[in-house]
Length: 434
Image (cartoon, rainbow, N blue to C red):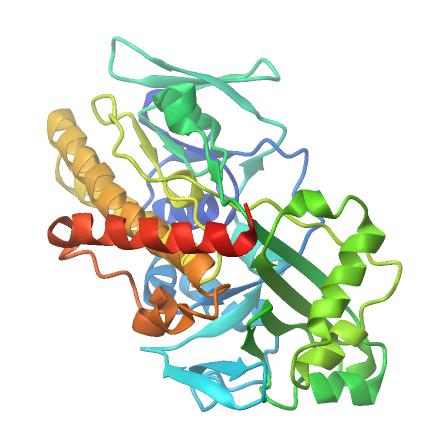
């Protein structure tokens, strides 16, 4: 495990947030012998009880570069099913079913490789070898006259370094210190109902049936429901122990359902409209399930002032987005890769070239703001369009599948895109009855 106590405080990179983004940055710095310290507001590593799956695809080469070889060679430990060959059909395709008739609506090939991972297992894997300082909630950042920066925490601790990296999630404390309250705040997706549940069928035949159309994950689209069904835990050879994840969404008001029983009833009613095996997934949901209709939020990325190269953002702190196109984690890992490379190149040349590093980090912020803003825009648009049967096939996921967002023509297409998004939002609002 890395030790940061033997280096001069002013030389350290201070990473705020020990999610996958912050931990990936820590590994990249550690491989390059660049001193760092990493902090998280949680009391310990195991206090995040919620679990879901995530898709790793175009960012896999970046993650491989950041992690030590012996750790990345074990990446399959985070897979939802390590026994599957993720480079063979149908696992190297994104499959979408028509919920009305059960036919394959679209099957998009994935460029490179895609794997589906457990959030909990991936975080546990990339936390290995990293000394995280837990119970550190950031309260302030001070920019010192000697070009260092000091992070102050709610527990009374203060840490000084050369750079603060805000990798602390969609409601980032670092971002709140860089912008006004209004500019830093996330915005909710209005008139969107979204729920994410995990369940265990508890029966061998039922579990096998849920994987009969796709061994790992697939999407089902219906005029009244968006559904993603994924295996979550299949370590055991006994299918009766397998667990699954079920993401559901539709247009409407979350406030119309005030208690878990009414939310579960509505979820199962809509799920009953789908083709098999998706319909059976909803039948497996027990009456004791605490169904929550979650508020989806986003942050429309803006370029920030790096304060002479002393503060940056990465991951959800830089571009919080809805999950419907599976891009958030992949952009977060690209942020980590880009940032670590800048710091490695700086340390290879001259550690005294502070002005040059400041310029490079501001360029990093500018690139993240363009790439992040475009992906947030696309993901927001996609979140509405996959829930609207009339415009579904014009959605970004149908146009771009899981590819990185096309940012080269962003400026040229900006006015056209904004007008298109306004039109979609108008249609969606009318459909939702808002």
